[in-house]
Length: 373
Length: 139
Image 1: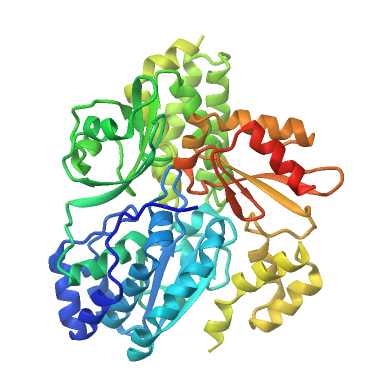
Image 2: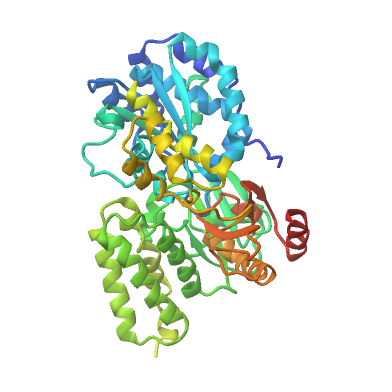
């Protein structure tokens, strides 16, 4: 597969500049750049590094390449076109917090990128030796939960990848109880660009898929109208709804809506990792919810009761609604269950699981009601 | 030093799975010794992941993506076609133990949907015709 390039190739220049600065200076530069985590939570990257650098103990850097969110594939494109940027980001982060050991946690589904990543590591070897950094790759074996930043720690430590209680946050007590920085692939790939002076925090990568003729990764400027992006991607049929991945919620399509985190949040949804799935008029929202819920039943890690059992019961309700066998009482029960799971679950996976149903009920309630007896 | 060994566990399990097609008790014990971890803990970890199995599944694996973006691009038609052709249901192995048909979380190929992972390698923009060719090449 050949892929089009979307990011500037720093070719070790960014890391070169960063290593000529002191760790404190590096953290200051990253803090001032306005870079926020691109994995979903959006925590300021510089601040995360500062917290880790100030915490006592051996330091670790983890590159989270376990991109499992449905509809998200920007990290795949980065790993296949500019893997060296990611390695540079790891080197700069290690220099900033004083880490001697770093890991790339690559999801098993992306196993075929291993040769490319190894080649990039080889190229960056001289810089790694300069700061005495050892970089290992851990290949996941198929588990969505491993994208969660504390589950990833348990996975690398060889335990079952169940999430940990937060706080303490990994930046204070992470891998083996030591301060650990967990950063997403896109976040790390942006770091060298900061030192080259070409980073713009208002621009971000967005994976667009679903009912469009030209799906792909788009670099969008915050505030761009969704209709303008769709002009490029050429919709198939009449767009009806936008789905922000499995855990980002569903909202009605509005061509004039400007893409900002606030605008999306106002409609009850969550932009997180920059996923946009376009849904057209031929698809039923109830059936879409059913397909998303099947995904969650498959991926719930089973640690907490609320998520393990809740996901299955929610799917039962949706299947019944979808088959036209449910009553209004069932619909109300489903909503109640969703509200329960969204507060009672242990980690972010469980808490965000009901979001697609809750937002669908908020914006497309009549589709559910029509199917109920 | 011991910590570094633990980080090897997942890679070791993956390698053994690839080599043997499954993780035998003997193999798990060997790995446990290598990474300095109790056998029961290695067992507990190994049984969590969907790519690792205790029993031999099949020579080849075909994994379908279960994400909603794929669903919108009629991946259900592809999965039904595969089920019909192989005469198995999702999550099962063919009678001759040649092909395992399973599901996996989004494989990040939604822009080239419908997509499959065949023995770990991506096959994109799948059509029924492509499946026929694929199945012939796997036999």
